Image (cartoon, rainbow, N blue to C red; front, side, top):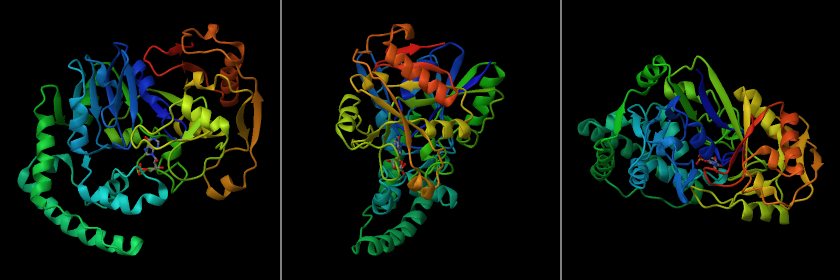
Length: 420
Ligand code: IMP
């Protein structure tokens, strides 16, 4: 029996939600776990023509028989989580939330608004929340469950952060930004959303590590779901153009408190590349092909609605992700979006390095492949793909040394080709 982890190999938005939704299906998988990030993520699952854009809930949440888990490495905005919960159909998975999760507080969003602009953050308070976590000033879900403790922690942190925001705002924009909210109001609002969640019959707040170890002891499989992606990893991405958590495989250990004995690592790669926010993007395109990829692929952020930057596939980046995550296989998504582009290019050299100077100096080498004109969206078997599309997939396998086991040809749950 193997546990599974699904990680993004590029800059996020690879379509991990759809792959997690598929892999969560078998009876062997009984829990689906998110281990890092917050509502900066956006996983879209389309079922029966209905689109579910999840930001905090694990993508397995639509499978009634499973338990979805929000691990301690995830940071929570209770208003967002309860709002997302309300959009679920009646038949959804059980939800276990770690009481060690840190909370995104109002001041975190204000600070992100002041400081995150030059990096193009999502403005959801992610970086400042993780900053307080590491700085040992964070407020955890377990603190919020006790009103007295919560009120004192909020009073202390609000006073501190009002001063901090004043200084930051004066230095960055020359004008003061005020945090016009009282500690009592914050506590009332947060407890309202947290109590709503805790009262749901299929929701529990508790010890995730213990639960996952119990699942493992019963010989049932666990599926871990990375949000964002390797190139956005605070340790292994292109620093400082990164998020503030560890989306790569290492994040699952600290972000869930579980050590899988045996782990199948599935990397998800889009058949081309997209990125949101600032920072280097070596294969970025600025021409009609970029526009076509954005329009056909609906490349607009699930979280912020921002148009995504688009470019050619960069297998150097995937090979870097392969090394960091120890990938076993690839899921290649959105192959259908490449229809009508001819020729198609793939960046293959020089070896990718996350050092900013090395990226700026690198002279990229591309290979060119023939494109295809056929619509792929109704194809369900690899052997039925046009020859040029098959060759594209085979080329990705040969350039990465990884088997492509799943191929996405559209947004729906069933638009997935399984290639053994
Ligand atoms: P933050 O995570 O909001 O702090 O943003 C840091 C960087 O990560 C910015 O460039 C964001 O655009 C990017 N980012 C964060 N979450 C996602 C995601 O889910 N998909 C793609 N990019 C993301």
